[in-house]
Length: 194
Image (cartoon, rainbow, N blue to C red; front, top):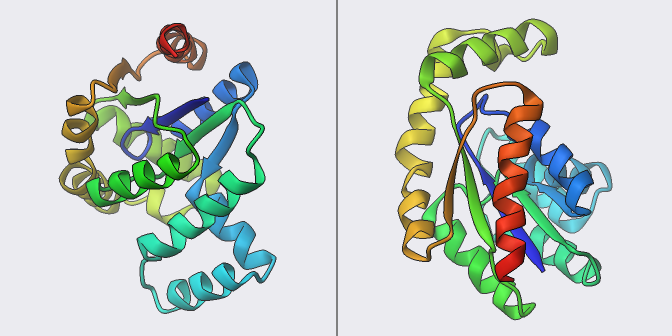
């Protein structure tokens, strides 16, 4: 199975690229944000727990997110693999994901990190804010804070996956098609060794 962690700061283009990779490699896209919204809309036990926390402005704990991922893995045993988008965000989550995948006799094939400089990220998010209406994409200080949080909390994942020889930096600047081709080339290289 091909299990890809798609990694990058806010505005790097993970969502856009994930969709293209899902179609090209016939993978299942696991976006933690989409999963939470789906669980909440279906009023599942996990969704009810998550909604109660979100309504209080709290983060959804790793155990709940891992529970959702576990359910999706159970229900998609026959698929080609997964793209994890938005998870893991911390080393603790990466360890939890590894432990979960082992139970399904799987592992993370590689962590592909879209690398984009800070000013480009700010410009992209401000542009997205004009069309999406998202308040967090319209304020430079909020954007900079999100990038700083990413750098302090999420960047340690690079060391975690590097130690496993599963870290693959990918230039995240250029046209959507150019970036997609770079990502596809890395993944095709991974499939040769699987």
